Length: 488
Image (cartoon, rainbow, N blue to C red; front, side):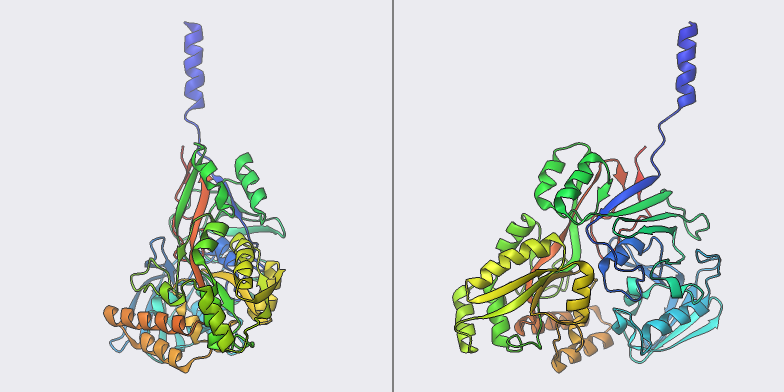
């Protein structure tokens, strides 16, 4: 009897097992800095978006626009004035108060002439930003823009404070449910729960983002438990092995990542549309998807996500046809082919896809000099320096077809007709009209063969089977941990 009573007491004292409150996530790329308002790399938002930094609006897991630091907003009848009512009682992680003046500072900084914001065009239509009082901001546009609340949900539009902006690249101060803790460069970034968060508290006390660029090392880290989840797992060939292991859950979804063979349109011979068209016909998309992504990916023929209702399937315009590619090259004066550079960033889709594409281009007479670059090198040489012939990259920003209207964007496409299409889109508010314009835009760049359109990147994630709340799809560049918890 005494033994039975003692056992019962021990069980009662032990109670149910407590759920874990920390998590380690694997990421293939490390952010070059921690300033989402001045850095183009998606990895910045993958750490900070919704976790540490917040905007007036936010993009939810289903792609919808939700209130964030703005609790509500009104739009004038002419579509030119947006009045945002701000959340009260919000503080930045350094204890300073969030108020309308911070919104004015952030948006004026983003749209300033000397702004280094990678998506500065998002703010080009803003004519003025005014604080009507501490909790109300009025933004006046130069022309109606039905996409404006969505634009404010991008990571590039998060709100920062003048008191802390000078050190944002290494010590980001936001208003989110997590606070930045530490960055061990070359290894990991950690964030911790913000006890003073204005909204619903998160379940996790701490999160670590560990940077593992090598696919083999990523597999080993998952198997040994060094990381709990890899939201975008870099070795799709291993997914089948995880699927049959009850310790893990494979999460396959969609992304906004249009993966392209990006072409320097101002560099000869790519300034000739016939050469760009030849490139497109030399590429076997399905062979790249099968060989580099083990079947994960959806072929695309333009810069637009197939899951978007406005998508048009234009893959037939650039169907795999090596004979047509050779004929076009001969017509353009390159019957004997030519040599160009192929500069590849670290992701496996680029490195593996690059080898396949190089072989396909060789079949039609185009030789490529492959350079494998680290992410910071790629940003400096290709994205900022435009020193390349070809590259492969996945554009993971949401609804970003508007980049083709920027003369100075890294693939250097210049088309007054396309700019006019984008201007008409900004003025349109009727959903059917906007769909028609978006479809016109897709077809325009497809027929100009601006880039080689390869596939829509699938979101292939692996996680400990006990984790709940990770995003299956990626409507924006984020590892949003606000709803993540461990099963008890």
